Amino acid sequence: MRKIVVILSSCMIFALLLAGCGADEPDYTTEQFESALNKGDNLEGKTVSVKVDEIVPDSAFGYNIETGEHLNFVSTDNPKVKKGDEVVLKAKEVKSVLGSFIISYEKQ
Image (cartoon, rainbow, N blue to C red; front, side, top):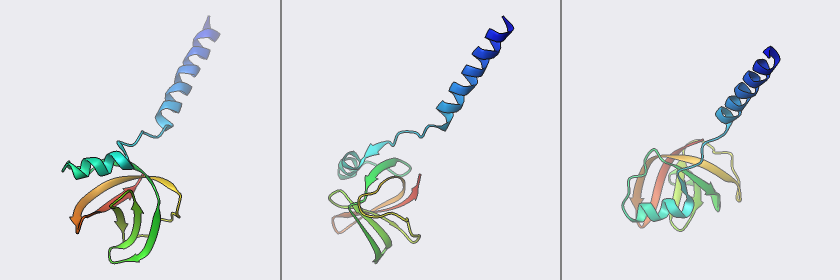
């Protein structure tokens, strides 16, 4: 009986550890994120899964990850990504500039 309790307890602990180590799903896909911004939703603090369409290291805003139709995720720090990479970003601040969205972010 004691062995069964130890085995079941071990299995439960292992399952909890696996669940705790799993990454949370992002709140939005790129398309959903851009659609919500176009509707005027406040998405600061939300996470988005982004496929890097282009990386522009010397834009006016710093390093610019371009994706979607008009999404520009910008940072003064090198995000260390390349075209085609998929990353999850957390929007810190969103601004609309000349028909595009300029979004400061944190990598997740």
